[in-house]
Length: 220
Ligand SMILES: Nc1ncnc2c1ncn2[C@@H]1O[C@H](COP(=O)(O)OP(=O)(O)OP(=O)(O)O)[C@@H](O)[C@H]1O
Image (cartoon, rainbow, N blue to C red; front, side, top):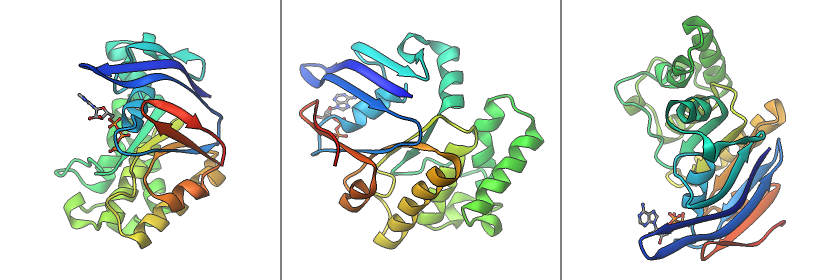
């Protein structure tokens, strides 16, 4: 479903990625682990089309995404990839519901249809009573669940998460991990998760280890 071949990336004199190959199948939950500076976030950003590799290929559902540019790239990303970051990046002036709707509205879907799906998702994630609140009125765990609902609004092929529970206490972190597995069960949702959380990594189908810009080991 997602694959990359021989991805390299350099910042100045620093070779951050030194030829990374990776394949992820539909419905898989894969964690990406490794020490600080190993290149995990850089790889996630390249796979998520947020950053460009110096060389190599990224294929998502047989589309070579590194060939897409400008508006075509933005539209492709919005439709096919969902993101959840450590700091949720919700827009503070919009309600939870509006935050979830925005990627759907950007995708030119009918306003009402997007709203209905957003409400369903928020209800599913236990936020039915909180959907008209702004992010600052929600707890950290609630904000992160809004970010997950936002990532799901366009039925993405894959959700890419960068330290999604890095900012949560252990109870909320466990709840969010459980949510990822529930979403896989319900929608066969695929996830690639950068994490330092060993408990989460151990629960995943597969843990990919990175060291000094390379993948060093595979299946756990
Ligand atoms: N935009 C940038 N400009 C210059 N150097 C960068 C840039 N982004 C990342 N780097 C460097 O590339 C290396 C890899 O960074 P990356 O964020 O991918 O590591 P990571 O494995 O995700 O680390 P962490 O676990 O600490 O988040 C680091 O040495 C970092 O300082």
